[in-house]
Image 1 (cartoon, rainbow, N blue to C red):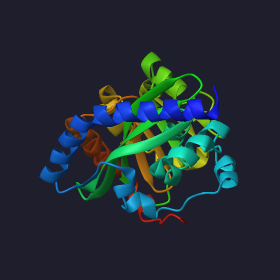
Image 2: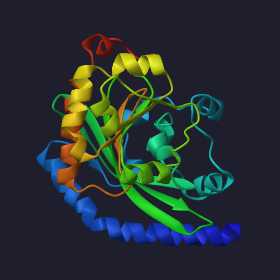
Image 3: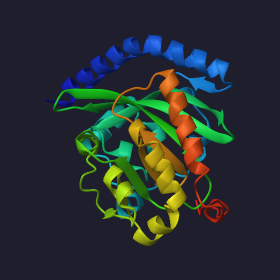
Image 4: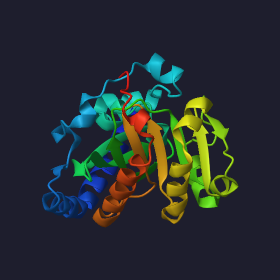
Length: 264
């Protein structure tokens, strides 16, 4: 497939999702108004907190477990732009590796239980395979110095999600287990720094996660905050549940860690 064919294909896919998202945007905008959140239908409209985060250069991203854009993704970037949110959230593997190229839509931002939250949709495309998808993310901002940790439910469905995200073999991440066997049976934890992960995941936090195991949230923790990502779009009530879970999760982080500012 040539460059022009790729451009036409991407344009058609984007047009399809633009129509598909019209009703979704109305529902999310209504939710935002009811909860004093800002709402941006297009990424160009968003100038919120995530855009204030630093952008890593490709070498830094690779050195910290990330990877640079593929040649096809660079082509899509030149033609249509790319995901401004994922460019800023470069340290979060859960979203970065899906598709050749991504763009954002339907961005919510506001305070939930005294925590700044940003929720957004991402469209992704695999150009040669003619595949595309759309999913939602919810990000809890945290200025504390956080370890790089991925916490996912165990089981087949969760494993398939990690496969979809190219996370079964994350370079630089290592599986860790804890003394509490019940926790190990319910949650899969991978980290770039085992010592920091053990310090961060306390008995209190493990109990909170086990209480919420049936909700099947996939968490990634890194510089700047805590991310929930899905493989589908979340309805407004599910976005609310994810925010509730994240605000509760932060309350189970050791206070000493929360008082340590990130170096970003």
